[in-house]
Image (cartoon, rainbow, N blue to C red; front, side):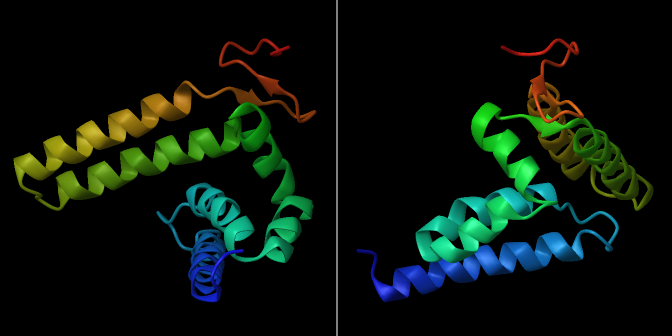
Length: 137
């Protein structure tokens, strides 16, 4: 049995990430998917009811199922993430950030982009596909 304080901490993390992910739907440059994935990871540790709600949600559930079962990311989410990474770096560059900051963020963003691009896509039917577009069996 998980200690009540631990359950509260996990639940708080899950609800906080859901809140940040929700804000990301309307706030530019704030991602939704990473917060959703953290919430899905933390929720079962703090609130099985919240975890069930997330996985059964008509809009959030399919993305979570694709990630859990195949580590697949929707193509739209990949595109949006890549565009936001580029815009974020350009804002730093145009804002006159120090070259070391530009180099470090570029390295981090390239690693994140590489990770995303190597995840399979989720086809419209919900079945994961490889980056080449072939269905994974």
